[in-house]
Amino acid sequence: MSTPNPADRVDTLERLLGDPEDVGNPLGYGPLLEADEADLMFAAGERALDDFGLNAEFVPSEYGGRLRGLDTFIGIMRAVYRRDPSLGLGYGFSSFIAGVNVWSAGDEDQCREAASLLLSGQRIAAAYHELAHGNDFAGTDCAAVRDASGRLLLSGRKEVVCNIQRSRALVVLARTAEGRGSRNHSQLLIDKAALPPETLVDLRRWPSVGMRGVQLGGMEFRDCPVPDSAVLGDEGQGTETALRSFQLTRIALPGMLCGVLDSGLRLAQRLAVERELYGAPVSALPTVRAQLADAFVDLLISDCATTVAARGVHLLTGQSSVHASAVKYQVSGHLMGAMDSLSAVLGANFYLREGRYGAFQKLLRDLKLAGFGHAARVACLVTMLPQMPVLARRGWTEGPEAPSEVFRPDVEVGALPFQRLSLFGRGRDSLLTALATGAERMAADGAAEGAEAAELRTLVGQLLDESEALRRECALLRPSDIGVDAPPEVLRLPARYAALLSASACLNVWLESGTRGDPALQDPAWLIAALHRLARGLGHAGVDDIGPVRERLYSQLAERYEAAESFDLSRRRLPS
Image (spheres, rainbow, N blue to C red):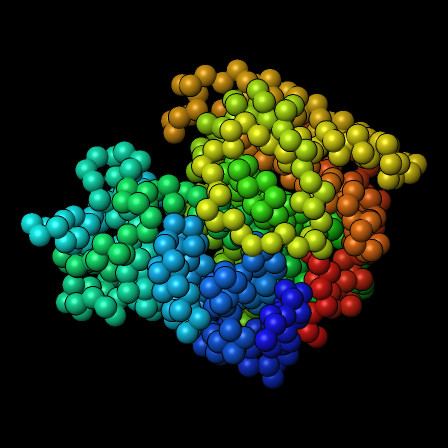
């Protein structure tokens, strides 16, 4: 039997979840908020995802699942996050995080074992975190050492791990050699059911402010016997495997969390059209319309950046190490900033934990994961920083041209290249190079006319000036400037780089939008607003008067709202 295409699978999932505002929907906001108040996973939602077979989305097609393109995977999971971020993380994304390490480093038997578990409805947890060390993998205390007979014995604790108690299997990062070197840790794929129960001790659950239903727990390993066949890849390869896998999860997580802003924007627009102030709907106020339009633009910027980076994993594989961290830093900032702004539109209603707008406060709390999941935003800047000098010396001017398919979500990109992920980009950067080539194409094609063309030329010129200034500054960085103790002013360099990557993604998605037949996407208004927002964030003037563009964008937002369409690039019809 053939597997339905991703768009059909998203539509099926959306229909299964139904209209979240329908008071009679057992998968709607009412029952969801009741589960959240009780710090429980949304059981009805989990049963629905069981019926959909969501676990198959985490398993590569060669092992019997449905996972192929990273961007299509993000689109499917965005439907879940649009409804309930806790359900997205607690039901399955944690299994994807663990699974990526297996697909990247595991042998055939390990991959088939993990696939069999997931396809039978089981979970796999990634047990990395230790409270004493946070994201410092080199400091991990949990260790797998050999006894006199040569058998591996796993001892130590893992804490604040999603689904560690509910999972059948674990991917455990453990020390297998002394010292803090990069080859002193390994990853172990262990089946809890195959181990002596007295060697595994469940630790307490950790309550959380956001993602309240997610089961964050811990486990202590007490001389737990682990077979050599559990080691993923070569012994000592664990940190490298984790860092390569993070390239996928750092792109996927913010991409999926775009669904949270989509739902938050929908709730804010509902209040704006339903409530009256001074004898007119709140949506008549220019300030409110501007806030809603700006949040809409933040969502489009975020979707462009994550979609392009996700497709770049397939088409520009060796460059993903820096792009992933840039996306995680930049997009999480847009998403959290937009939701904070929308809370002002809701006013006192955003505090309410029940009723017509009660879901907003949950979405706002749950979204905070975007700022720290898979390393905090500042850690992403630290990760990018060592690559900045070589990118500046070669990548800005010598990067190979990005294929147009990177900017076209309608073109399938094939299976994920897990084994070809690289820790360093070697000075190549096709996505930033595409900012200049996109500017040349825009000028040659005459893609916009009149005042809009002039505004786009102004904005792109400012961004190209920023790119050249950044290139010069990064080329001067010294080895002492790019370590983990880099001063704050140096960390602003990769932050500026991340904004430029987003600008390049937006410009080139717009240039390719003619192939998709969406008049709203071909309209220069959203691109002008996006580049203005990014240029202003980089300290440039932007355009003189963004007001008329905001008005057009608000009209498009209101049109999508009335038609029950998503606010992201897909403009998908939603249940209503």
